[in-house]
Length: 145
Image (cartoon, rainbow, N blue to C red; front, side, top):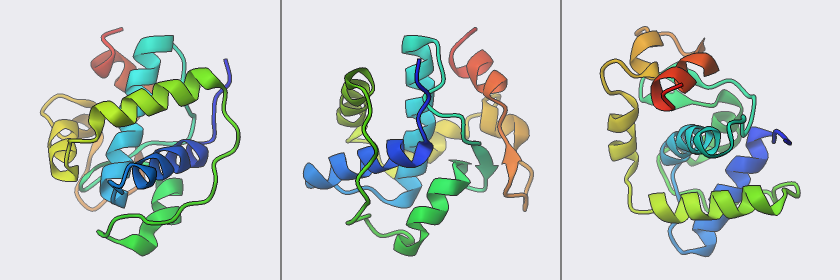
């Protein structure tokens, strides 16, 4: 299976929400990337992307994507580069995933990712930004394997 660059996954999600008239903030995008990774692994048993997911104050963050969209701060992301071409299985998955999660707020997603005993909770240390959340931990807890 092909593993994608997280920037392309993020760009796909951002552009989908812009097209739907419901642009996301960087905060919501970060949590969407986390749950997209989890959902993809549950469905296909493989990584959607291999870029690090880190535990920051407000939940899981992919630093590479955070840097790309940080200019928006807490405002909706209104522009994004075009993602690289992805196969239809991935675009179909991401489209359904985005539709299913459109109604969640960034705050609701932060709360979900910060539950006691979940991956973020196990590795987060106050003041540390780049503590990686191991994929094995995410799989064991979020995917039950």
